[in-house]
Image 1 (cartoon, rainbow, N blue to C red):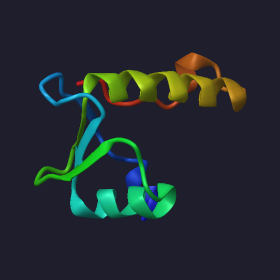
Image 2: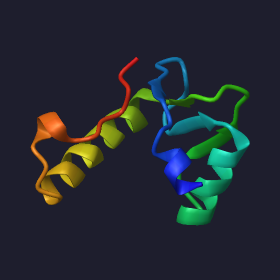
Image 3: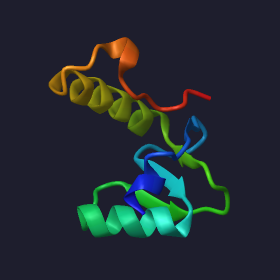
Length: 84
């Protein structure tokens, strides 16, 4: 399942309230299993894409950049979220 999560499409949705993530049930379950209780809203959605509020989208971008630097990957080669 974790391999499947790596292929998720992250979509910034500025209409969502802050600290909100909308994802398919399997994704919500995996997040809850991996992280336990979280301080953001997890909502089960009907689409395959994961829609996240602008603040979470920005936070993910910062985290992804730090992870890329830590792994020694140049930013151009680093995996990134789909910015649709």
